[in-house]
Length: 282
Image (tube, rainbow, N blue to C red; front, side, top):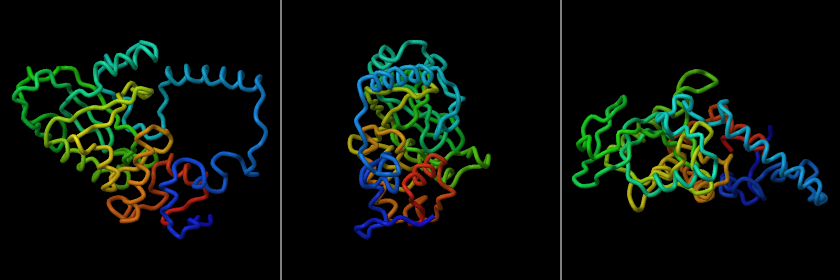
């Protein structure tokens, strides 16, 4: 496959252009091989399309099959999180319970998934100490934290899997990404921020931006330091904000970008690049 280079001469420019538009490659951002705009669909076609979307949405909510970039989803912590409540009610409840709440990380699953407990009493809270394996080694009294554990999937990013579905072994840079998260969350409680349009994935895990301080999110730090990819399958607000961060990390060849090849990337990423006629290294 021929390697696609930017007209500007910058081989990393496509990383900053988002999921479509000029950076979409050969297929013109999903317009088809002919690249034309085509004819607008009629009213009947639009109604049919909307009905199909609604039907598929119900299937996805009930689905249990493994999705792209899921990362040990089947073992999601906190059984009560798998609520039977419908979409809108569940989102409102999640926003009330978890948005802007402080929590401690009690287990690091991999570079984009952690288990947390919410702060119950903020007075006297000390930084938590996370051992090499899992669990809290030291920290505040039990009464300072809710006993319930919640699994959080960091929004907008995808770190290499500790058990790659293709090989059964840790993916490229998976161990480094997991160790990076452990080191960062040891410094103290974190703050969860949710997006109101979607608060859970299909496995019941919370989707959140994990803030280490007022000025730094763990999601962005992972991308900035080359520990994770921007998860471009979903066009959330944070994805758009992280595109230039990923491009800069790739330019600097930091972290996983130093030695990664296209074949070592997650399957969704390989597919995303194939659709746009892209290769790596550029």
